[in-house]
View 1 (tube, rainbow, N blue to C red):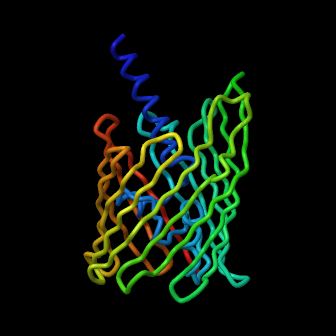
View 2 (cartoon, rainbow, N blue to C red):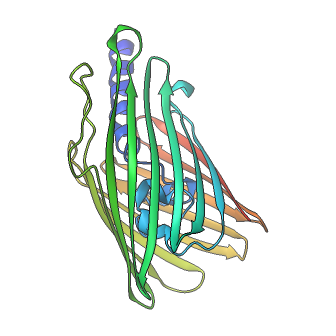
Length: 271
């Protein structure tokens, strides 16, 4: 009986933790290895997190992401993204799927970013979120949007901010679930060409504020190590990154004291 209670507790904790990164978007293994979402840094998946950070991309880019489930492989997350510069800005298309046929969360985003000056960029995303509960419990979808901003405060200091679902769009009454609103701010500081760190604070409408602090260090030109710690959810993270001529490969793992390790992998290609 105690084992059943413990399993139910872990399962519920896993679902709650997934909302901290599920509908809120996939960041990619590089930021997640630092316990951050990536509110300031640009990745192929930035259309999920802060579309403004896409504005300075100059190459067509595509990314794939996989996160192994904490309790079961059925609770894994899969995502894909494409970034295309053009039309006086940068577009991106993103899709993610969490769960399996009895419980799933999906999000699809079309984002656009534009440079507003030498040190300022803004972005917007149009999003469709879908939750499926399986069986007779039904499913529901909801449209919403997100806004983002990125600014160069000083030579070595950058700022980013985003808000997701500010209109509190939700699912139908047939599904007893909510689509949370979220806002966040972040700073990155470059200590040198090899070392930089980031601090982020995020707040979901249905959770306490979370804090992430992490660093990235370039051991070699094409090899990086990362680490970080997050509060609410409380978890350590670490990761490595390898850069080749036409792709980046990033591997990370988040360690939760109850649920153990959750490995993540993302590969980004550019042309």
